Length: 193
Image (cartoon, rainbow, N blue to C red; front, top):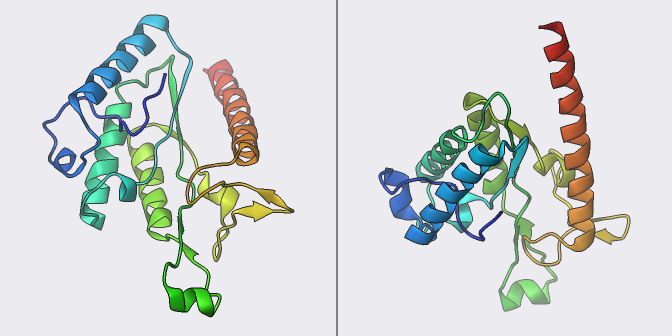
C-alpha cells in the first residue's frame, strides 16, 4: 500500500510542508486511506520507508530537514498502537557523482552524500521519541568511514540511490531478521507481564 514520493503527512498545517512540492492533496488522501486501512484491518506490522529530506525539500537546510522528519515520525505514531508495530526502515546511502570534465580526466570519483547519515541519526532519535521501531539500513551499507555500493561483486544499487534486485534482497533479508528478533523479544516481554 504505497505511493511513490508521498511522505506520511496527514494535513497541510505544518510549516515544514511548505518546503515539499511532493505533498499534494492526493498524497494526503492516500495517507488517510492508509491510516483507516491499518485501523480497520488490524494490521500487525507496518513498514515505512522514504528517501532522505534532501530529495523532498526544494531548499535543504538542517533546520528544515529536522522539522520534516520530526513531523513524519509524529504522524506515523498515529498508526502505531499496542497491536500495530511501526517499523521505520531507515535511509540508504545516496551517491553524488562528480560531473566535471576535469574530474573525469583525472578519474576522480563521486562520493556518498553524508548529509544522509546525519539525517539517519535524526530519524533514529525521532523514531525513538515517537515510540517507533527503527531499522538502521545505513549500517548495512556503510561503516564509520565509507559507504559501499557493492560487496563481493554484488551491486546493491543500480543508480545513485535505488536498490538493485540483489540490494533489495539483501535489505529484505535483514528486515526479516530484525522483525523476527524483535517479535521474539516482544513476546518474551509479554510473557513476563
